[in-house]
Image 1 (cartoon, rainbow, N blue to C red):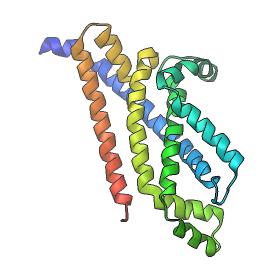
Image 2 (image 1 turned 90 degrees about the horizontal axis):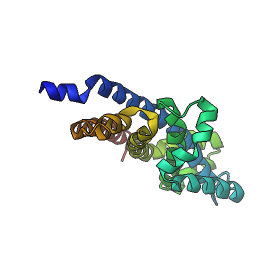
Image 3 (image 1 turned 180 degrees about the vertical axis):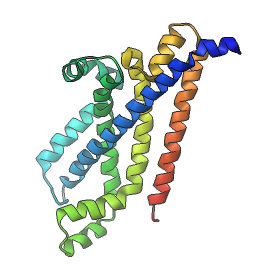
Image 4 (image 1 turned 60 degrees about the horizontal axis):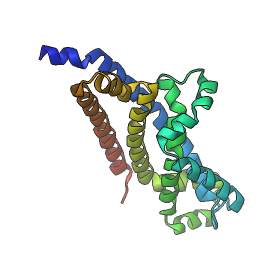
Length: 221
């Protein structure tokens, strides 16, 4: 038992867990904001909606599709020059944030667009007939009506981001992925990799529980 406690390096595990939670929380918040804006723009500029504009819709949709299609590990490598220019380094938890956000926001934007498309058109038309402004329609109709789906979508995205942080850890971003790679794989200690995996699973279960709770609380059906 003493050998197990020493082998795992609990102080390093706790530090790696904090780094993973830091990267996840910051990137989830930024992804939610950016993805919501992009998703609203995709929906509102589509044909028949209040900001209908084919050019803007095609351009934004194209950008979203491109970044959504790039595998995360390749995106990290592609963004190395941008990350170094922005932060002055490509190592550490902060250096992973640009790739995490740019990789996840387009994915969430499509989920936002899908959630908005599920809203009954009659609700939007009723608001327009009563003279509601565009801002009122967005903040009083679209977002509240789609809130359960938006929360469910960001929960799925958050869980994907936890996996992304593990991949980013392999190339020096820190967190549980880096811990598992350095002390588990390179140190030839499978038990360390197993412990890191269990720590990631616990974080995933907590995020899923919180997401499910708020999805049910906001669902008025």
